[in-house]
Image (cartoon, rainbow, N blue to C red; front, side):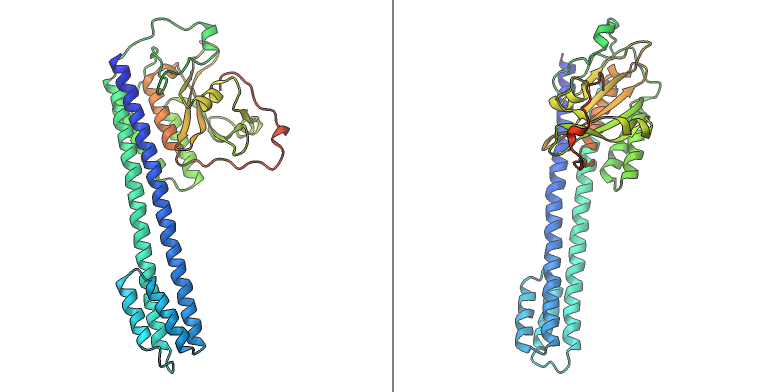
Length: 348
């Protein structure tokens, strides 16, 4: 009991770390936007100064330079503007004045670039720290957790519906599934995956990382379902292991449907679909949780009964937590949402 309570507590702490990192990134992005806004205001003021000088309006140029100095953020810019103000009374030679204004603008731009780069480094450090903490939790779950085996095979009736999720991740008792890969390489791959997800910059990189995640949890197929803003359905936005034609034919998934993906979205908890021996693979459904709530789910079809493995469940949950910060919600389609029926299929 204490082992399970410790696992749940560590997992919740890991999710809290990812949530905190996401909140920090959001605040940091607001600061970056403020920096860019200040630079745009400075550029507009320099254009106003140049216009006044071109019109040989000494009084207007002096007032504009004074306003420009008031919004300067660097000593270099203020010194350059003071030199420009000193020469504004004599507009017979405007080149030195314009040169000082250009020096001030360059100083402000360099300072803004440096400040933005510093914020980006802080964001990267926060995401890397959250990923590292997640790896520590994963190591605890996969190495320190005592190995146990299921006392009996589930009946065919039980395997048709997902096992109910327990508190936290909803981890199930492990089956006889064991991975042939040593724990060390798996942890290294998980660490690399979390780090790369924090640095992903385009869709192609994200698709490649989804493939690596599927391999990490022994998934033969994986689909990322995202909530559609203003609609009551989920749509597939990323996939691996299924043909493009099959994904294109998938109908929207109703949030109220009676299947593991919809239940995982509504509850915000991990869902397990047990395998049916000789008939179908099992599955793991992990919710994508953000500070605004659940925004989607990752459904993964697991080979060889691995859906009952606590390490597979933990890996899926960590991957989903990291993915929630980088996958945007799909846009609402132009056609009526009533034109396509919501799915009510079993499993995922």
